[in-house]
Length: 158
Image 1 (cartoon, rainbow, N blue to C red):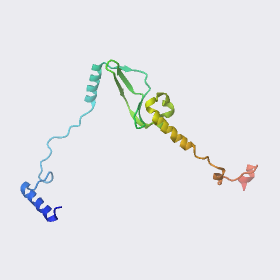
Image 2: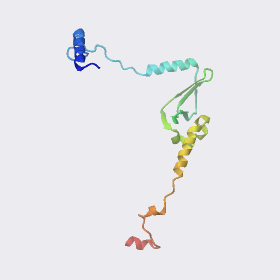
Image 3: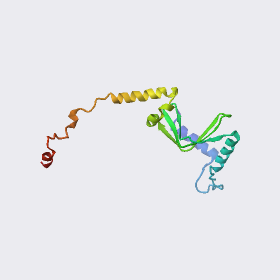
Image 4: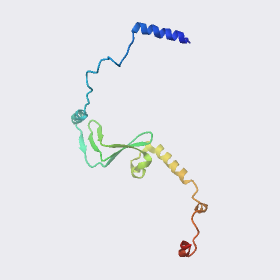
């Protein structure tokens, strides 16, 4: 390993060869070209033009779209705009997407689950069975509730 003196000598040699280089600070050139902020409207127009070229048609009446990922999360579109072209095997789903866990959508999407999601469903079922296996609260937990006799009026007055 080189010593501190050797490192300093190498740095001095490099400074002598290159000079004092500086990328900013006093006397440096100003930026002459302003950064352009582009809108996404042009991208959207190009996308719509390409979709029109594919011959997609809007499919009305779709309330929600769920895309299941392998890690157990779901991309959930509520009231999306769906377009399809059967000839080119292209489906376009656009709208606001939420990334949710499978457990959050479970009762309503059971009929949408296929064999691909069987392992996720088993994992969720094991989690519920482990939670249900805990013993229920015993009567000893009710220590802060006073025993009330037959007459509530007397107990409340004392």
